[in-house]
Image 1 (cartoon, rainbow, N blue to C red):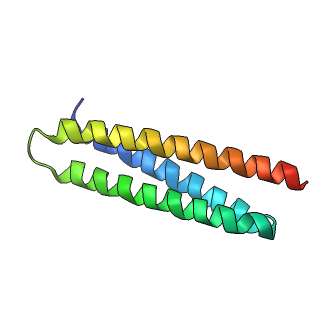
Image 2 (spheres, rainbow, N blue to C red):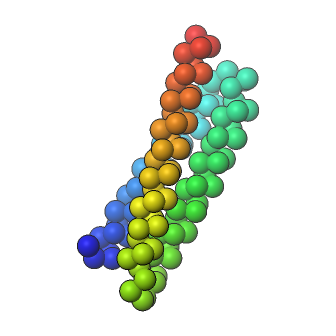
Length: 101
């Protein structure tokens, strides 16, 4: 796959992650006070993961050597980790919200 397509795919993924983090942050803000502290930390962690992923995408976009293919694999791995973290955070939030109702 061409580097430009991979970078484009990664940008779509980071945008998706940003939307999901924003959604979780809003739900956390609207939730019960006890849950806010725990989920605020989770949101900060997700933001850090997102920023790391964004840095990898930036590096991938600007790398000039053939090493971009290896870096693309690293970006895929980072995305997998981020997607898992987002899913876990969403599930934990839903579980917490269900307990408080």
